[in-house]
Length: 365
Image (cartoon, rainbow, N blue to C red):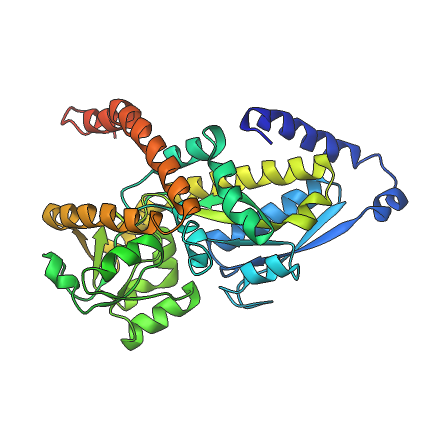
């Protein structure tokens, strides 16, 4: 469905919901479907709550014609096993993060986030109005799946450490949890990068199995209790300026739906994408203040010299990954092309306004 047909799809979804109130129960039961949805994330917290809300929305908006049974990480399959479950048809839908599937595709991590790449607003503009969903579908279709953006963390924090990062040499020898392209960049500075599901991060950090970790941002990180095992909290999240979660659907299951059911899923995924981002935005500052003032976390900014070196290396690493196959190259080029236009507009609009708002004039509150 083209993005310009998005509102039309919402109207179809509303009509389906309205119709469900007058269709008889026997008629509904003849076409009723139940999907299994397998998540990479736990039930508790922002990610799990929004997936449950999505499932409830689809069930209600289709009048129960399409119901969804959610299994959070470890309830049906492991956190990193749901992609295979959906590909095989064991589950009809999954929720994860595209860089979790880097072992299956060189191109797929570009869909999640790119170091020094697009922010959340730019990312959504690319997906919905500049061919981003269609670009992602070229990757996911190889595995018999349909892609939707279905959540965004916004700009993440740089990570938790038990040592200061003052120079690029301070990364040498660290055992650090960071998925995606950010991890690939850190490897070039001598970091032993570890990929762990969320449920194992705190215990690994506390035991010394890893020396540091990134997760998401203050609201999620405080909920995980990461402040209990690390002292320094660094920003900005250069590695993930915005991270999209992927709703991936088995193509056979998707094609078996009616047009109105597909419209409900598209509308529900888009709403989940926006609402999750909004909740992170609403909660992060209060959580950050609690981390600093109540839990005595030492908030640190990466030195500009370190960021400059990481940025230069990130460009080299991304180009190397993009050169490995034609699909990676075309995906990377599509994002970089949009990034150029986004930078011009963002710097003229949001960037300039942020600087203006920070000027020392008096303002209420």
